[in-house]
Length: 175
Length: 175
Image (cartoon, rainbow over all chains, first blue to last red; front, side, top):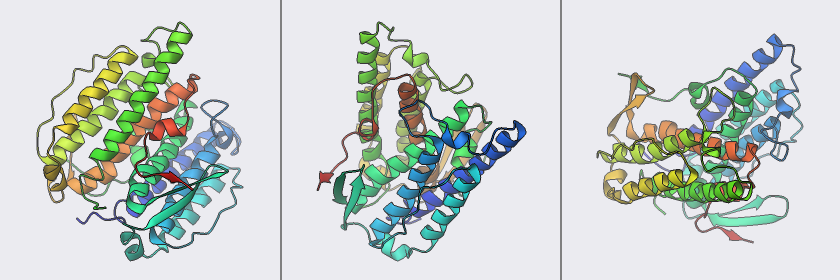
């Protein structure tokens, strides 16, 4: 199996976002069973000064889409951040997966050596070599928002476990 | 910059564990300022049926150490999981970093194609090709426990932000 800038990003984003979509599906079923509105969990937070679930999902999607596009040297479409319900957030993930599927893997694989510029919060911008950006900035950030989304749902009692976080691990056999 | 099984693992583990150690240092200062005992935060959880902070840190350390050793085809020492205080957990991170520093990078880089076997919970074992294991099992699990440790501290009011989670991002310039 080759390790290049494509294999360390897109397949990881695709598996993880698929897992997140399924987790949000469990959160929808949990909400329906308890007559909790579909916009309640998206507004829940671990603490008041952290982003709510909806923003965690939006940022995870944006790290996947924008980091891949930057690595490939192409433009990714911007999304509106207007999701209110769990179904909206699942649709955001679908649109993100469609963008990922439309980026030429060869361009992503050619990322090493490319200089990446990216926004850091509302006013600052950062600049890094593409490989270091993917390994030490984009992927840790992506996983952070993914795990925080999971933590918000777990802290509210949604019945999900580590296999839900990981999703379909490719080639895993039980022995 | 080369992308191989070493560059996608050890430097990521080292940067992230260094960041986690600094975060635990801030948690120590926070505890001292509030006369909260040094074993209180290590016992805190997001919800009763998730692991407490201490276990999140232990598992993050073990994924870093054991995944690297498995990728390299060497044995990593087992640690006792007897940490009670924040200082104990920082010492666990130091011992983990020492193990990582003692594994030959060339052996880790030679991981692709190797078959990895590993425990999954108390009774099951898994088997995977090494590259897929690192990208789709070990690294997501590592980041999950790291982000959950951070979330437990944030949810308790410790003043840490995303830069604390990321640590020293190599080659990042502000523009």
